[in-house]
Length: 403
Image 1: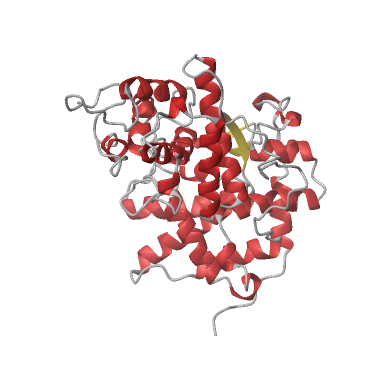
Image 2 (image 1 turned 135 degrees about the horizontal axis):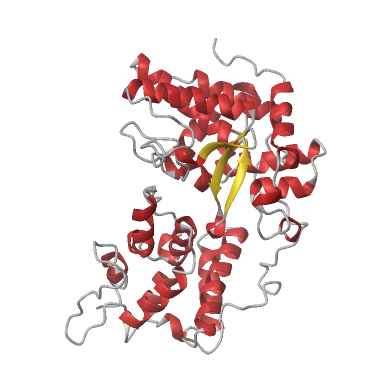
């Protein structure tokens, strides 16, 4: 395969074949430029990605490295089929798509297993020249280091070429680093909820009401500090009662589940949305625990009942922010799902919530102080959700943006 078309194999891998099914090779021609044994490399990648139970984690790593999402999804295809949990469609290619590691290596006709620290530094310089922010380069280098750490452990490579001195590269990260995420106040979160309810969504009155209730439910879920991947992955069966409280069973990073306590705001928003959805579908499917067909249906659904994608909800949130009135003036184009997660943490701490409770709420598994907060020790008293909801309720109502 010519070096000018180095990525045809990566796109071809996104077909209907599973990772275990070899892609036929033309006689004497490799389907991965610079790689003499592409099937061996594919097997090593499957072995690495297969360690991650969370499909979202596999997708994130695959996207950062330049692997076809459909090919990576097939790794957990059997498990997804057993659970009945659908997978949101992949996000569109971003501006750095062609500079993902494997695509960069293919353009150099370089077997990724032969890469050295010099190659990794050249790749980082290319990302910098293309406008990749420092945090983006930090994340991409961390992903690469995780891959090569596995390959080194299994003997596929002699050493980890991505184990670089990040301080010398200007990529060190400290607790003093300023976050680029916009800081939203409780008043601004309330403005988003109000705008979500008021925004016109459809010329059809019945669909307009359904979509408005869905938008409010989405914003409400994000006020719990959930990741957007966790929101789109929720099924109706993940909502149930335990110990007299309504909770969500959330699948977080690393394939770990945690229980998130619902506030009155979230419970009411979900109840209104699901009731309207059931009324329109005439199914009246229950939203509580039990072996019903509702268990495996998405919590937030598209018009045809499919699972919303992260892009769908990101676009919806940005549209809501643009119509949120004076409270979001100058900030609307910087609002994204993670900003609401960030707001949960900052508002909770401002309300004097215990930091251990906040860490447990948002599922920061890498923070040592959360390790002793297993699901068996979680209770209503060990969550900051009610403090955040109370702050939102007490915030001044936003000015009416309508004339």
